[in-house]
Length: 423
Ligand code: GDP
Ligand code: IMO
Ligand code: MG
Image (cartoon, rainbow, N blue to C red; front, side, top):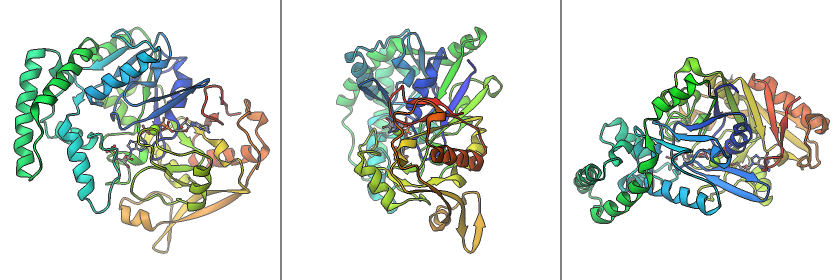
């Protein structure tokens, strides 16, 4: 199979984990290239539900190699807990199937505490996951971060961590913030380093060896296009490049070795955390929450829900160069009399079809809707496109026409079996 980048075409939680799992059968290597344990990718296999944060979703398939590449930020303690949790459930995780880049940056305790404190002080809260992601990327860009390569030699790591904690505590003091006791951090991180050491390697060279052997790769995007540090609804974004280009810088695999880009989107829109969401709809949110749907996989927070936004997803198709779309959660709209699609925004008396740069403007955008009749029957049992109600097919055709990319996969339920080809 081709080398594929898979990205979220909305605000995250599009069902990427489920589609990754579906596509993993045809690939050799699954690679995470950005983000960290702010991600929560859900995979349901028969009655078993797995939520993966850092470990690539390919781990649930025997015989696949999973890579945490250089663009990821890794909380070593959290990664060890995730590995232990998977092993407890009988999933094999070893140095043969989970490789961690020596260039990936390390999330330290002060990243988490700064993340939480900055959130509490902000007037317009981002609603971060408080996993220290933003501050860890800030240290990377400021060239003060520790990297996984620093964990390889126990003595050197101990000295580097001690030095870094000293600097951090000087900084915290200047900010009138409580210092972090270095001793417990030292012990906790040294324990995690010992566990992770066998996994740490030069993943760039590994991926190039795989390319030379014509092995196929699936790049597992985290978050979504509108959480991208450049293309998202800044400042209500995460701190990494969540769009397709980020997969290349985040892995060392060059753009000319990528064969296709897959965009995953829900049949409606959700967002967790702060920031504008033009098509947000109270009644739709309530309806989905009453069905027990749309609660965050990592934080359990209720997701904000809205109608499908073709202005946003159309933009995502362009920025990512999406070749194929996967539509998930089509079954979420089952009971509705009518379904709405946003085809443009009205802003300051004008009609626009691309999201404006300024979030204040985006917050003022009035969606222009097209209404379609609902199909008003359950579709979670459907396994073939042809068996979808005609109105559901008409809705999908509308999404395809408006976003400008062909729909390739349809998902009508959380489990592996509830996915089929479009058309
Ligand atoms: P990700 O972060 O993009 O991997 O998405 P999440 O796992 O955070 O959230 C997607 C949620 O939708 C999870 O609870 C999935 O199990 C669920 N899901 C995915 N596709 C479908 C679908 O087609 N129908 C239903 N009912 N649930 C789905
Ligand atoms: P997956 O991979 C949905 C959101 C947070 C917050 C903003 C910044 O499961 O789709 P951060 O902790 O990254 O600094 O938070 O981004 N966010 C996500 N929303 N899905 C995610 O990941 C997210 N990762 C971060 O809620 O609004
Ligand atoms: Mg998620």
